[in-house]
Every structure is written in C-alpha cells, then in structure tokens.
Length: 384
Image (cartoon, rainbow, N blue to C red; front, side):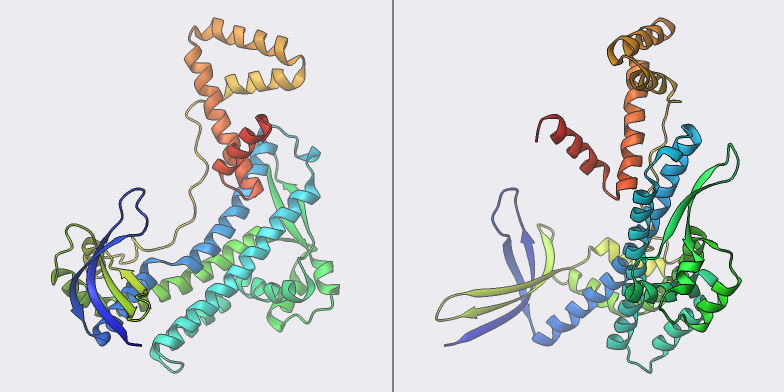
C-alpha cells in the first residue's frame, strides 16, 4: 500500500446546500512550510480568540445582570419579598461556581500556553507569574476567591443569602456569603483568605469581591495580550507573504494537508483557513497605536436594551390584567389610553418595548438567551 501526503496552499468554497466544500490547490509546499504556517495561524488566533477569558467574563456578567434584574423588580415593583429567594440565591451561587471554575481554567490555560510556546524558565513565564503575583497582592477579592475556588471543590457550593440593601430610590438586591458557615466548614483556609475572614463581618457581600477579583484577572489578561502581540508581530509578515503568493480572490485562502491511500482511494484532509489580509494588517497597525489591544480585548455581553418609551401604558395594562377581570379591566384601560393618545401605535410600541425588556430580564435571571425564552413561550402556547 502506498500513502501519498500532499501539503499545499489552496482556496475553498461552499455554496448554500452544498455537501462539503470545493477545494482548489494553488501550489504545493513542503511539510516544514505547512507546519510553520499552521503555527503562525495558531499564533494569530491565540491573540484574537480569548475564549477562556471570555468565559470568565460571561459568568461574571450573568451574575451582575441577574442581581440587576432583581434590583429593578424591587425598585419598580417592591415585591422582591414575595420572590423565591432560596431558589434565586441557588441560581446565583451556581453561576458563581461556574465563574470560579472559569478562573481556574483561564489561569491554567495561560500557564500551559506559555510553557509550551516559550518554556518554564522563559522571560514570558516570568511576566505571567509577576502579573499573577501583582493581582494577588493588590486585590483582596482575588486572594479570597482564589481560595474559595478550592473550598467549593472540597466542600461544595457555599451558603449565600439574598438581601435588599439601601433606601428608596436606591434599593438594590445583593447576595452575601455566610461567614460562620465558611469558618466552621472542614476546610483549611490558606493564611491569606483566613486573615480576610477574621476581619470581615458576618455577611460577606459577594459581588464587590468578584468585581475586585476581575480587576486582577483583567490585569493578567493585559499582560497575556502583550505576550501574544509580540509573538504575533513575528509571524504575521509570513502569513501576509503567503497570502500575496497565490490567487485566492475567488475563495477562502487555506493551507491543507491530505493523505491519499492508493489501495482504498481514501483521502484524509486537514485544513486551516488563513486570517483575512485586512485583519493581519490591522495587527501590525495596532502594534504602533496608543492602545494596541482595543480591537482584540474580550468584552462583557451588552446590557439589556433600554426602553425608548417610558413604559407607563404597558404598566397600566399589565396592572389591570393582574389586578382584576383580565378582559373587562384591560379593555377599559386600553380604551382610556386610546382616548388620550388617539393613536394605537403608541400603546403597541410601548407593549413591544416592555415585552422586549422583560424577556431580556427573564433570560438573565434564568441564565438563558432571549431567543430561548421566546421559543419556550411559543412552544408552551401551542402545546409543544
């Protein structure tokens, strides 16, 4: 049996409905060229795809939005006392556990990345360790939650309570950890976390600690971006040179390796798509700018949409619906609104805007997406 291995620059296309892709070889290259260009593409992706840090940001954002949605309910409705606080607290703490797991994943991923690409004793490893040490020394939240992650691993999710803090109109819902539960658990806190527990009050606000910890993780991420950018600056010219060396105007530029078995005529294909020429050039341009990481920083998901109307019409209709006879009372309120406005588009717009905002808030509380919530409501209404 004869096995043929081919490495090449190529272009690929896939039309709507097409099974598989159409590949056109531009020119063959050596195995060493294939490997060096694959490594260069991976280098670019390590700078632009910050998935581990993004996962940590998303969990942090979910917790903030869940508490913000509850605070809005308290601010506008004053009915948080009727909520199932234990269930909601469990949801928030479950998301906190996801965040703690994401912090560990992030730190270990970055350490492994440096070790593989630069070595244990490299200058880059020194920079990474220095950034971690600085975050640990500067931020109490980082120090405590670093050990709380170990607590969760050995003792489970900690006990937490939802509370309403502040006076109207600045009332907000917060979640606190139970200091006594933490101290009486069968867990050996490290000396840094224990020193903090010894001086804190019985109720330990969780979100401020997470906010402070995220400042530390963000500083580490900035250092990792510097390391990745330096590495990317070395490999980017080679990728741009490759893109200039063959015509890919009618498809997506790629580098491929395929292995053909002469007896079975089977082909094992491996392919990596080149970054676009403009995105590679933007890396070189960004390196000389005041903020070279502006286009590659991972950012938190956007906040819920703001209502373009004041919501008073929708609030009046919904209040009538929940307060009395749904059909009669709602009809009377709608008629009254119509007499004042003289235009049905205002009340329709208000109801749509309010529905959008409430759906967004509900999705945050559930840790889901607005599309999933709407889809669930639709399937329920149709008996699905």
